Length: 216
Ligand SMILES: N[C@@H](CCC(=O)N[C@@H](CS)C(=O)NCC(=O)O)C(=O)O
Image 1 (cartoon, rainbow, N blue to C red):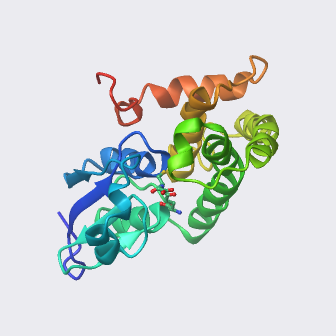
Image 2 (image 1 turned 60 degrees about the vertical axis):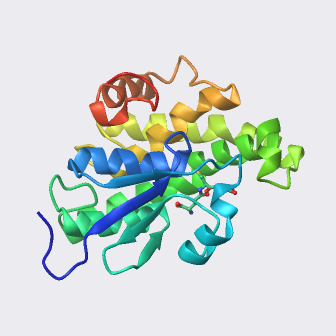
Protein backbone atom coordinates (compact mmCIF):
# COMPACT_ATOMS: atom_id res chain seq x y z
CA UNK A 1 0.00 0.00 0.00
CA UNK A 2 1.41 3.43 -0.91
CA UNK A 3 0.24 6.88 -1.91
CA UNK A 4 0.15 6.82 -5.74
CA UNK A 5 1.98 10.11 -6.36
CA UNK A 6 4.86 9.46 -3.95
CA UNK A 7 7.88 7.29 -4.81
CA UNK A 8 8.30 4.18 -2.65
CA UNK A 9 11.12 3.87 -0.16
CA UNK A 10 13.56 1.27 -1.43
CA UNK A 11 16.47 1.11 1.03
CA UNK A 12 17.31 2.36 4.52
CA UNK A 13 20.98 2.99 5.26
CA UNK A 14 21.39 2.54 8.98
CA UNK A 15 23.12 1.07 12.04
CA UNK A 16 20.46 -0.53 14.26
CA UNK A 17 22.15 0.24 17.61
CA UNK A 18 22.64 3.95 16.87
CA UNK A 19 19.90 6.18 18.33
CA UNK A 20 18.68 8.01 15.22
CA UNK A 21 18.36 4.91 13.02
CA UNK A 22 16.61 3.19 15.92
CA UNK A 23 13.99 5.96 15.97
CA UNK A 24 13.23 5.29 12.31
CA UNK A 25 13.32 1.51 12.79
CA UNK A 26 10.72 1.69 15.58
CA UNK A 27 8.55 3.93 13.41
CA UNK A 28 8.82 1.45 10.50
CA UNK A 29 7.97 -1.47 12.80
CA UNK A 30 4.91 0.35 14.17
CA UNK A 31 3.72 0.93 10.60
CA UNK A 32 4.41 -2.67 9.63
CA UNK A 33 6.40 -1.57 6.55
CA UNK A 34 8.96 -3.79 4.78
CA UNK A 35 12.05 -1.84 3.67
CA UNK A 36 15.39 -3.25 2.58
CA UNK A 37 18.22 -2.35 4.98
CA UNK A 38 21.86 -1.60 4.37
CA UNK A 39 23.83 -1.59 7.64
CA UNK A 40 26.94 0.60 7.86
CA UNK A 41 29.78 0.15 10.33
CA UNK A 42 30.10 3.67 11.76
CA UNK A 43 33.20 3.00 13.84
CA UNK A 44 34.94 1.76 10.67
CA UNK A 45 33.81 4.99 8.99
CA UNK A 46 31.62 3.39 6.30
CA UNK A 47 29.39 6.48 6.37
CA UNK A 48 32.40 8.62 5.41
CA UNK A 49 33.35 6.50 2.40
CA UNK A 50 33.33 8.57 -0.82
CA UNK A 51 30.60 6.49 -2.49
CA UNK A 52 28.25 6.88 0.50
CA UNK A 53 29.00 10.60 0.87
CA UNK A 54 28.47 11.36 -2.81
CA UNK A 55 25.18 9.45 -2.74
CA UNK A 56 23.79 10.72 0.58
CA UNK A 57 25.43 14.12 0.96
CA UNK A 58 26.10 13.89 4.71
CA UNK A 59 28.18 11.40 6.73
CA UNK A 60 25.23 10.20 8.79
CA UNK A 61 22.64 7.50 9.17
CA UNK A 62 19.75 7.00 8.80
CA UNK A 63 19.26 7.78 5.12
CA UNK A 64 16.29 6.60 3.11
CA UNK A 65 16.67 6.01 -0.62
CA UNK A 66 13.53 6.43 -2.68
CA UNK A 67 12.60 4.72 -5.92
CA UNK A 68 13.39 7.85 -7.97
CA UNK A 69 16.89 8.13 -6.44
CA UNK A 70 16.05 10.86 -3.92
CA UNK A 71 17.84 10.43 -0.60
CA UNK A 72 16.11 11.57 2.58
CA UNK A 73 18.10 12.16 5.75
CA UNK A 74 16.96 13.50 9.17
CA UNK A 75 14.99 10.95 11.15
CA UNK A 76 11.98 13.22 11.55
CA UNK A 77 11.82 13.95 7.80
CA UNK A 78 12.04 10.24 7.03
CA UNK A 79 9.22 9.52 9.50
CA UNK A 80 7.15 12.35 8.03
CA UNK A 81 7.54 10.85 4.55
CA UNK A 82 6.61 7.35 5.71
CA UNK A 83 3.62 8.76 7.59
CA UNK A 84 2.37 10.27 4.33
CA UNK A 85 2.93 7.01 2.45
CA UNK A 86 1.47 4.82 5.20
CA UNK A 87 -1.01 6.90 7.22
CA UNK A 88 -2.06 4.09 9.58
CA UNK A 89 -1.51 3.76 12.44
CA UNK A 90 -1.32 7.53 12.82
CA UNK A 91 1.91 8.48 14.61
CA UNK A 92 2.24 12.20 13.84
CA UNK A 93 -1.23 13.67 14.28
CA UNK A 94 -4.62 13.31 12.61
CA UNK A 95 -5.83 16.91 13.09
CA UNK A 96 -4.03 20.29 12.99
CA UNK A 97 -4.18 20.43 16.81
CA UNK A 98 -2.79 16.92 17.27
CA UNK A 99 -0.08 17.45 14.67
CA UNK A 100 1.11 20.60 16.43
CA UNK A 101 1.06 19.09 19.92
CA UNK A 102 2.89 15.93 18.79
CA UNK A 103 5.45 18.03 16.91
CA UNK A 104 5.96 20.21 19.98
CA UNK A 105 6.64 17.22 22.25
CA UNK A 106 8.78 15.46 19.69
CA UNK A 107 10.99 18.58 19.43
CA UNK A 108 11.07 19.11 23.19
CA UNK A 109 12.25 15.53 23.70
CA UNK A 110 14.69 15.56 20.79
CA UNK A 111 16.34 18.86 21.69
CA UNK A 112 16.12 18.14 25.42
CA UNK A 113 16.62 14.62 26.73
CA UNK A 114 17.73 12.99 23.47
CA UNK A 115 20.32 15.70 22.77
CA UNK A 116 21.65 15.56 26.35
CA UNK A 117 22.05 11.76 26.30
CA UNK A 118 23.65 11.60 22.85
CA UNK A 119 26.04 14.50 23.60
CA UNK A 120 27.06 12.77 26.85
CA UNK A 121 27.81 9.63 24.84
CA UNK A 122 29.63 11.36 22.00
CA UNK A 123 31.84 13.44 24.27
CA UNK A 124 32.65 10.93 27.05
CA UNK A 125 32.76 7.46 25.46
CA UNK A 126 36.31 6.53 24.32
CA UNK A 127 34.98 4.63 21.28
CA UNK A 128 33.40 7.83 20.00
CA UNK A 129 36.74 9.59 19.62
CA UNK A 130 36.77 8.02 16.12
CA UNK A 131 33.73 10.12 15.20
CA UNK A 132 33.77 13.20 17.41
CA UNK A 133 36.20 15.98 18.39
CA UNK A 134 35.53 15.16 22.00
CA UNK A 135 35.17 17.85 24.66
CA UNK A 136 34.72 15.82 27.88
CA UNK A 137 33.55 18.91 29.83
CA UNK A 138 30.72 19.36 27.31
CA UNK A 139 29.84 15.71 27.84
CA UNK A 140 29.65 16.23 31.60
CA UNK A 141 27.56 19.40 31.24
CA UNK A 142 25.11 17.35 29.21
CA UNK A 143 25.18 14.50 31.73
CA UNK A 144 24.08 16.96 34.44
CA UNK A 145 21.12 18.03 32.27
CA UNK A 146 19.74 14.48 31.99
CA UNK A 147 17.92 14.37 35.39
CA UNK A 148 16.19 17.69 34.67
CA UNK A 149 14.81 16.37 31.39
CA UNK A 150 13.75 13.09 33.01
CA UNK A 151 11.86 15.02 35.69
CA UNK A 152 10.07 17.08 33.04
CA UNK A 153 9.04 13.94 31.22
CA UNK A 154 7.79 12.38 34.45
CA UNK A 155 5.69 15.50 35.14
CA UNK A 156 4.21 15.33 31.65
CA UNK A 157 3.40 11.64 32.09
CA UNK A 158 1.51 12.43 35.28
CA UNK A 159 -1.09 14.15 33.10
CA UNK A 160 -0.94 12.12 29.88
CA UNK A 161 -0.65 8.36 29.26
CA UNK A 162 1.86 8.97 26.44
CA UNK A 163 4.27 11.83 25.82
CA UNK A 164 2.20 13.77 23.29
CA UNK A 165 -1.23 12.18 23.12
CA UNK A 166 -3.58 9.53 24.47
CA UNK A 167 -1.75 7.06 22.24
CA UNK A 168 1.82 6.09 21.29
CA UNK A 169 3.32 8.58 18.81
CA UNK A 170 6.63 9.61 17.29
CA UNK A 171 7.38 11.64 20.45
CA UNK A 172 7.31 8.44 22.51
CA UNK A 173 9.76 6.87 20.08
CA UNK A 174 12.30 9.67 20.54
CA UNK A 175 11.85 9.46 24.32
CA UNK A 176 12.26 5.67 24.64
CA UNK A 177 15.33 5.67 22.39
CA UNK A 178 16.95 8.32 24.60
CA UNK A 179 15.96 6.45 27.78
CA UNK A 180 17.25 3.10 26.52
CA UNK A 181 20.53 4.83 25.70
CA UNK A 182 20.95 5.92 29.35
CA UNK A 183 22.49 2.51 30.08
CA UNK A 184 25.26 3.21 27.55
CA UNK A 185 26.21 6.44 29.38
CA UNK A 186 25.84 4.70 32.78
CA UNK A 187 22.85 6.75 33.87
CA UNK A 188 19.42 5.56 35.00
CA UNK A 189 15.91 6.78 35.64
CA UNK A 190 15.58 7.80 39.33
CA UNK A 191 13.23 5.44 41.21
CA UNK A 192 10.98 8.27 42.39
CA UNK A 193 9.93 9.06 38.80
CA UNK A 194 7.08 6.56 38.92
CA UNK A 195 5.04 8.02 36.05
CA UNK A 196 8.05 7.64 33.82
CA UNK A 197 8.74 4.10 35.09
CA UNK A 198 5.16 3.10 34.36
CA UNK A 199 5.34 4.55 30.84
CA UNK A 200 8.70 2.81 30.21
CA UNK A 201 7.14 -0.52 31.16
CA UNK A 202 4.27 -0.04 28.71
CA UNK A 203 6.45 1.22 25.88
CA UNK A 204 9.12 -1.48 26.24
CA UNK A 205 6.39 -4.12 25.98
CA UNK A 206 5.70 -3.04 22.39
CA UNK A 207 7.36 -5.43 19.89
CA UNK A 208 8.64 -2.42 17.90
CA UNK A 209 10.67 -1.28 20.92
CA UNK A 210 12.61 -4.51 21.48
CA UNK A 211 16.25 -3.54 21.82
CA UNK A 212 18.39 -4.37 18.76
CA UNK A 213 20.11 -7.70 19.32
CA UNK A 214 17.43 -8.95 21.75
CA UNK A 215 14.95 -11.64 20.77
CA UNK A 216 11.46 -10.36 20.07
N1 LIG B 1 19.73 14.92 12.72
C1 LIG B 1 20.02 13.61 12.21
C2 LIG B 1 21.18 13.05 13.03
C3 LIG B 1 21.76 11.77 12.45
C4 LIG B 1 22.94 11.30 13.26
O1 LIG B 1 23.59 12.05 13.99
N2 LIG B 1 23.24 10.01 13.12
C5 LIG B 1 24.36 9.44 13.81
C6 LIG B 1 23.98 8.05 14.32
S1 LIG B 1 22.81 8.16 15.64
C7 LIG B 1 25.51 9.32 12.84
O2 LIG B 1 25.30 9.01 11.68
N3 LIG B 1 26.73 9.58 13.29
C8 LIG B 1 27.90 9.47 12.49
C9 LIG B 1 28.97 10.43 12.91
O3 LIG B 1 28.75 11.21 13.85
O4 LIG B 1 30.04 10.40 12.30
C10 LIG B 1 18.77 12.72 12.29
O5 LIG B 1 17.78 13.18 12.87
O6 LIG B 1 18.72 11.64 11.73
